[in-house]
Every structure is written in structure tokens, then in C-alpha cells.
Image (tube, rainbow, N blue to C red; front, side):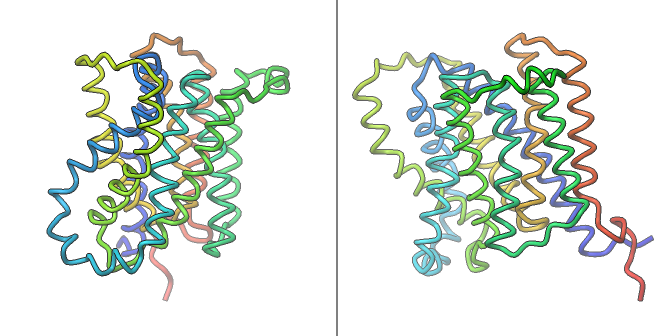
Length: 311
């Protein structure tokens, strides 16, 4: 049985999305774990500054060739940088000062697919079939089951706090970013695109970074903080964003963002291993439901992936 080019693109997009969520899942644990050691904007600034420093040598030659395209699309790049770099993770780090790591992952990944699907449908005219809607609903159901700990009474009594609102803002920013990435000009390569938005986003963070540092105690640098920033700057930023953007170009923003529902599952595993949080059957059931939802959402309506079209 032959696999069509479209199916290969789909498999590649799914694989890239999975790699990204495994890397990004640690972001929520870090946001909570290091919240008492470094202010949120400072963490975001150092992360993106390091990412910019690392990616410039890799992209500089191509940037010289694509400079004209960058200048022609500066307004587009401004909004991508604002939503995906300056705001998205900064809001996560701010939220980490008010709510738990589990809430960060749960609320962010529950709302992001909804925002992204709505935006992709309105602005990209992306079709959403019954399977994708069913899969998305199942994913949300799994996350809500985890949020409620299996108790509908607890879910009914749930109230959004300050941190929860910040993470909702982060999810919306991420959905905007996903929608914009689908419109990336073909004249700008992936590596140059990342360099442009990393540097622009870092520059956007300079004013709030200066304000924050002038009103906060001096940082006490140590090995743990340096390793954390290296993980965020290189792993979460360069590797993660490159894989995620490529996934979006292959399978679209609405489908790609569904994989973010796996983040709380991986985050829970990491929280158990790193922060010593308990793992229960609730987490196991929720994980199975979310993964099932993802599988359904990525099925092709009318033709299984891998089955050639009838001539």
C-alpha cells in the first residue's frame, strides 16, 4: 500500500507537534518551580535574549538573502512577535506566581484549541469537519475530567483566579500566533522567520524588563537558574518553535494546536518526577481520553490516512 505525499505531510506534521509538546510541557513546571527565584518578565527576557543570540549565527547568511522580504512583511512580523514571543510565555510566567503548574497546563491547553479553531475558521476559512470537532470535544472533556478530579460538583464550584485569567490571556495569544504562522510568506525561510520574531520579541520585552528590574531585588544567579534559562532559550524556543511552525505548515493551525492537549499529561508526569506531586488514576483516565480525542481529530473524514484515493 502506497502512502501519498499528503499523508506523509500529515505524519510529519503530527510527529513534529508531538516533539514540540514533549519539550514545551516542561515550560509550565519551570514557570511554577522558578517563580520565587526570578520575576516573570526577566525570565521571559533572558529566555528570548539567549534564543536570539543562539539563532542569529545559524540564520544570518539566509537573513542577508531574505532581508528584502523581511522589510516588506514587517507589520506581519510585528504581530507574530507580539503574540507568540512577547506575550504568550510572559503571561505564563506571570500566571506562575498566582496558580499551580497543573492549572497552568490545564487551563491553557483547554482554551487554546477553542480559540485557535475559531480564529482559523474565521480568518483562514479552514474547514472543521465532524471528526475534528468530536476529537476536540473529547480532548476538552479529558482535561475537564482532570480539572474536576472526576467530580462534577468540584467542576461546578471552580472559579477563575488571577493566575487563571493570565493563562487564558496566554492561550488566546498562542491561538493568534498559530493563526498568523499559517500566513508566513513563502519568501521567508523557517530559520530566518524564527530569528526575526525572536529578536523583535526580545526588543519588545526590553521596556517592561527595565521597569521590572528597577523595582525588584537583584537576582541571585546560580547553576539551576542558568540551566533553566538554557533549557527555555534553546529547547523551548529554538527547537520547540521550529518544530511547531513546521507542523502548522503541514497540518494547519487548528489541527496542530490540538496536540497542546497532551501538554498537561506530560506536565503531570514531569511534576511528579521533579516537584513530587502525586499521580492518580484520574490523571491516567484523563490522559487516555485526551489521546483518544487527538487520534479522532486527526483521522481523515471519508478516507483513512494511508489509503490511496480511488481513481
